[in-house]
Image (cartoon, rainbow, N blue to C red; front, side):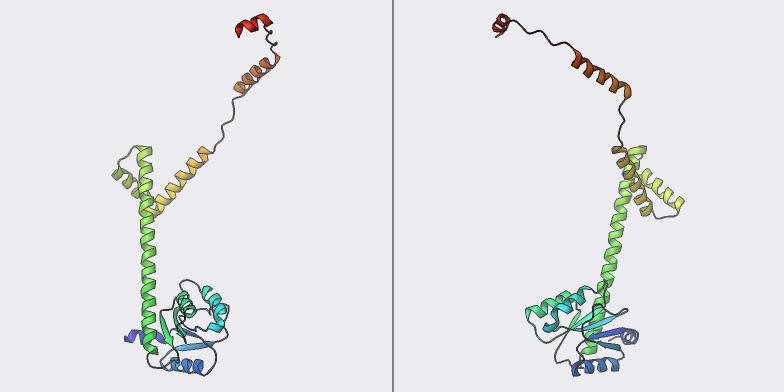
Length: 239
Protein backbone atom coordinates (compact mmCIF):
# COMPACT_ATOMS: atom_id res chain seq x y z
CA UNK A 1 0.00 0.00 0.00
CA UNK A 2 1.48 3.30 -1.08
CA UNK A 3 2.48 6.00 1.37
CA UNK A 4 0.75 8.59 -0.85
CA UNK A 5 -2.68 7.06 -0.14
CA UNK A 6 -2.05 6.95 3.61
CA UNK A 7 -1.10 10.61 3.46
CA UNK A 8 -4.19 11.40 1.37
CA UNK A 9 -6.48 9.81 3.98
CA UNK A 10 -5.87 12.71 6.36
CA UNK A 11 -7.29 15.16 3.84
CA UNK A 12 -10.32 13.12 2.79
CA UNK A 13 -13.80 13.74 4.14
CA UNK A 14 -15.43 10.40 5.02
CA UNK A 15 -19.17 10.02 5.64
CA UNK A 16 -20.53 6.85 7.28
CA UNK A 17 -24.24 6.41 6.56
CA UNK A 18 -25.05 3.81 9.19
CA UNK A 19 -27.42 3.50 12.17
CA UNK A 20 -25.87 4.94 15.34
CA UNK A 21 -25.55 1.56 17.01
CA UNK A 22 -22.55 -0.31 18.37
CA UNK A 23 -21.41 -1.38 14.90
CA UNK A 24 -21.64 2.13 13.45
CA UNK A 25 -19.73 3.68 16.34
CA UNK A 26 -17.04 0.96 16.19
CA UNK A 27 -16.62 1.49 12.44
CA UNK A 28 -16.29 5.23 12.92
CA UNK A 29 -13.71 4.80 15.67
CA UNK A 30 -11.62 2.45 13.53
CA UNK A 31 -11.70 4.86 10.57
CA UNK A 32 -10.47 7.57 12.91
CA UNK A 33 -7.60 5.33 14.10
CA UNK A 34 -6.35 4.70 10.56
CA UNK A 35 -6.20 8.44 9.86
CA UNK A 36 -9.62 9.33 8.42
CA UNK A 37 -11.97 12.10 9.53
CA UNK A 38 -15.29 10.21 9.60
CA UNK A 39 -18.76 11.61 10.19
CA UNK A 40 -21.50 9.22 11.30
CA UNK A 41 -24.93 10.16 9.89
CA UNK A 42 -28.35 8.60 10.48
CA UNK A 43 -31.21 8.55 9.47
CA UNK A 44 -30.84 8.68 5.70
CA UNK A 45 -30.60 12.36 4.68
CA UNK A 46 -32.14 13.87 1.58
CA UNK A 47 -28.78 14.74 0.06
CA UNK A 48 -25.10 14.05 0.56
CA UNK A 49 -23.10 16.51 2.69
CA UNK A 50 -20.93 18.82 0.64
CA UNK A 51 -17.29 17.96 -0.04
CA UNK A 52 -17.71 14.25 0.73
CA UNK A 53 -14.80 12.23 -0.65
CA UNK A 54 -15.64 8.73 0.61
CA UNK A 55 -19.08 7.35 1.51
CA UNK A 56 -19.63 4.13 3.45
CA UNK A 57 -23.32 3.32 3.19
CA UNK A 58 -25.27 0.62 4.99
CA UNK A 59 -27.57 -1.19 2.55
CA UNK A 60 -30.55 -2.10 4.71
CA UNK A 61 -33.72 -3.63 3.33
CA UNK A 62 -35.87 -1.71 5.82
CA UNK A 63 -34.67 1.62 4.40
CA UNK A 64 -34.48 0.67 0.74
CA UNK A 65 -36.64 3.48 -0.68
CA UNK A 66 -34.99 6.34 1.30
CA UNK A 67 -31.59 4.93 0.31
CA UNK A 68 -32.61 4.78 -3.35
CA UNK A 69 -33.76 8.42 -3.30
CA UNK A 70 -30.55 9.44 -1.51
CA UNK A 71 -28.29 7.62 -3.97
CA UNK A 72 -30.09 9.08 -6.98
CA UNK A 73 -29.55 12.58 -5.58
CA UNK A 74 -25.75 12.15 -5.43
CA UNK A 75 -24.13 14.46 -8.01
CA UNK A 76 -21.90 13.23 -10.78
CA UNK A 77 -19.03 12.71 -10.26
CA UNK A 78 -19.86 11.45 -6.82
CA UNK A 79 -17.64 10.23 -3.98
CA UNK A 80 -15.94 6.88 -3.64
CA UNK A 81 -18.69 4.56 -2.35
CA UNK A 82 -18.30 1.41 -0.24
CA UNK A 83 -21.43 -0.61 0.47
CA UNK A 84 -22.05 -2.42 3.76
CA UNK A 85 -24.32 -5.45 3.38
CA UNK A 86 -25.73 -8.21 5.56
CA UNK A 87 -27.24 -10.43 2.85
CA UNK A 88 -26.73 -11.17 -0.85
CA UNK A 89 -30.38 -11.30 -1.85
CA UNK A 90 -31.35 -9.91 -5.29
CA UNK A 91 -32.89 -6.70 -3.88
CA UNK A 92 -29.73 -5.88 -1.93
CA UNK A 93 -27.47 -6.64 -4.88
CA UNK A 94 -29.61 -4.43 -7.11
CA UNK A 95 -29.27 -1.52 -4.71
CA UNK A 96 -25.51 -2.08 -4.44
CA UNK A 97 -25.23 -1.91 -8.23
CA UNK A 98 -27.36 1.23 -8.37
CA UNK A 99 -25.14 2.88 -5.77
CA UNK A 100 -22.04 2.53 -7.95
CA UNK A 101 -20.07 1.06 -5.05
CA UNK A 102 -16.40 0.35 -5.70
CA UNK A 103 -16.12 -2.16 -2.83
CA UNK A 104 -18.41 -4.15 -0.53
CA UNK A 105 -17.97 -4.78 3.20
CA UNK A 106 -19.80 -7.76 4.68
CA UNK A 107 -21.28 -7.89 8.16
CA UNK A 108 -20.06 -8.34 10.77
CA UNK A 109 -17.58 -5.58 9.91
CA UNK A 110 -14.02 -6.47 10.89
CA UNK A 111 -11.21 -3.93 11.28
CA UNK A 112 -8.88 -6.18 9.29
CA UNK A 113 -9.18 -5.43 5.58
CA UNK A 114 -10.99 -2.10 5.95
CA UNK A 115 -7.96 -0.01 4.99
CA UNK A 116 -7.24 -2.30 2.02
CA UNK A 117 -10.81 -1.96 0.77
CA UNK A 118 -10.60 1.82 1.11
CA UNK A 119 -7.38 1.90 -0.92
CA UNK A 120 -8.72 -0.40 -3.65
CA UNK A 121 -12.01 1.50 -3.91
CA UNK A 122 -10.31 4.89 -4.03
CA UNK A 123 -7.84 3.71 -6.66
CA UNK A 124 -10.65 2.27 -8.83
CA UNK A 125 -12.60 5.52 -8.46
CA UNK A 126 -9.61 7.57 -9.61
CA UNK A 127 -9.09 5.35 -12.62
CA UNK A 128 -12.74 5.67 -13.55
CA UNK A 129 -12.52 9.46 -13.31
CA UNK A 130 -9.42 9.45 -15.51
CA UNK A 131 -11.21 7.31 -18.10
CA UNK A 132 -14.25 9.60 -18.04
CA UNK A 133 -12.01 12.65 -18.48
CA UNK A 134 -10.18 11.02 -21.40
CA UNK A 135 -13.51 10.07 -22.99
CA UNK A 136 -14.76 13.66 -22.75
CA UNK A 137 -11.49 14.95 -24.22
CA UNK A 138 -11.66 12.44 -27.08
CA UNK A 139 -15.30 13.35 -27.76
CA UNK A 140 -14.43 17.05 -27.93
CA UNK A 141 -11.54 16.23 -30.29
CA UNK A 142 -13.76 14.20 -32.62
CA UNK A 143 -16.48 16.84 -32.65
CA UNK A 144 -13.88 19.54 -33.32
CA UNK A 145 -12.42 17.59 -36.25
CA UNK A 146 -15.92 17.14 -37.68
CA UNK A 147 -16.56 20.89 -37.43
CA UNK A 148 -13.26 21.67 -39.17
CA UNK A 149 -14.15 19.24 -41.99
CA UNK A 150 -17.57 20.86 -42.43
CA UNK A 151 -16.07 24.35 -42.44
CA UNK A 152 -13.51 23.30 -45.07
CA UNK A 153 -16.27 21.83 -47.22
CA UNK A 154 -18.21 25.10 -47.09
CA UNK A 155 -15.14 27.15 -48.01
CA UNK A 156 -14.25 24.79 -50.85
CA UNK A 157 -17.76 25.12 -52.30
CA UNK A 158 -18.14 28.87 -51.84
CA UNK A 159 -14.63 30.04 -52.78
CA UNK A 160 -13.57 27.22 -55.12
CA UNK A 161 -10.61 26.24 -52.94
CA UNK A 162 -8.70 23.02 -52.58
CA UNK A 163 -8.84 21.22 -49.24
CA UNK A 164 -5.36 22.31 -48.15
CA UNK A 165 -6.13 25.90 -49.14
CA UNK A 166 -9.38 25.85 -47.16
CA UNK A 167 -7.51 24.48 -44.14
CA UNK A 168 -4.88 27.21 -44.35
CA UNK A 169 -7.62 29.82 -44.63
CA UNK A 170 -9.32 28.52 -41.47
CA UNK A 171 -6.04 28.38 -39.59
CA UNK A 172 -5.17 31.93 -40.64
CA UNK A 173 -8.54 33.21 -39.43
CA UNK A 174 -8.14 31.32 -36.13
CA UNK A 175 -4.68 32.83 -35.57
CA UNK A 176 -6.01 36.27 -36.40
CA UNK A 177 -8.81 35.93 -33.84
CA UNK A 178 -6.53 34.09 -31.35
CA UNK A 179 -8.86 31.13 -30.94
CA UNK A 180 -8.54 27.42 -31.59
CA UNK A 181 -9.31 26.31 -35.12
CA UNK A 182 -12.07 24.05 -33.79
CA UNK A 183 -13.78 27.01 -32.09
CA UNK A 184 -13.56 29.13 -35.25
CA UNK A 185 -14.89 26.26 -37.38
CA UNK A 186 -17.84 25.78 -35.02
CA UNK A 187 -18.76 29.48 -35.17
CA UNK A 188 -18.25 29.56 -38.94
CA UNK A 189 -20.54 26.56 -39.53
CA UNK A 190 -23.18 27.95 -37.15
CA UNK A 191 -23.19 31.31 -38.94
CA UNK A 192 -23.43 29.58 -42.33
CA UNK A 193 -26.36 27.43 -41.23
CA UNK A 194 -28.15 30.42 -39.70
CA UNK A 195 -27.75 32.39 -42.93
CA UNK A 196 -29.11 29.50 -45.01
CA UNK A 197 -32.05 29.04 -42.66
CA UNK A 198 -33.02 32.71 -42.77
CA UNK A 199 -32.71 32.72 -46.56
CA UNK A 200 -34.91 29.63 -46.96
CA UNK A 201 -37.67 31.02 -44.71
CA UNK A 202 -37.66 34.46 -46.36
CA UNK A 203 -41.08 35.24 -47.89
CA UNK A 204 -41.23 36.72 -51.39
CA UNK A 205 -43.73 39.61 -51.72
CA UNK A 206 -46.07 39.33 -54.75
CA UNK A 207 -45.58 41.74 -57.67
CA UNK A 208 -48.39 44.39 -57.59
CA UNK A 209 -48.56 44.51 -61.39
CA UNK A 210 -48.96 40.72 -61.59
CA UNK A 211 -51.63 40.77 -58.92
CA UNK A 212 -53.51 43.49 -60.81
CA UNK A 213 -53.38 41.52 -64.08
CA UNK A 214 -54.65 38.36 -62.37
CA UNK A 215 -57.51 40.31 -60.81
CA UNK A 216 -58.48 41.80 -64.18
CA UNK A 217 -58.54 38.36 -65.78
CA UNK A 218 -60.74 36.97 -63.02
CA UNK A 219 -63.05 40.00 -63.24
CA UNK A 220 -63.31 39.65 -67.01
CA UNK A 221 -64.20 36.01 -66.68
CA UNK A 222 -66.99 36.78 -64.27
CA UNK A 223 -68.43 39.59 -66.47
CA UNK A 224 -68.23 37.72 -69.81
CA UNK A 225 -71.65 36.87 -71.35
CA UNK A 226 -72.83 33.26 -71.13
CA UNK A 227 -72.18 31.05 -74.12
CA UNK A 228 -75.31 30.52 -76.29
CA UNK A 229 -76.93 27.17 -75.85
CA UNK A 230 -76.89 24.84 -78.88
CA UNK A 231 -80.24 23.92 -80.51
CA UNK A 232 -81.68 20.55 -79.64
CA UNK A 233 -81.01 19.19 -83.12
CA UNK A 234 -77.37 20.27 -82.97
CA UNK A 235 -76.96 18.64 -79.60
CA UNK A 236 -78.33 15.37 -80.95
CA UNK A 237 -75.96 15.50 -83.90
CA UNK A 238 -73.00 16.18 -81.66
CA UNK A 239 -73.83 13.06 -79.71
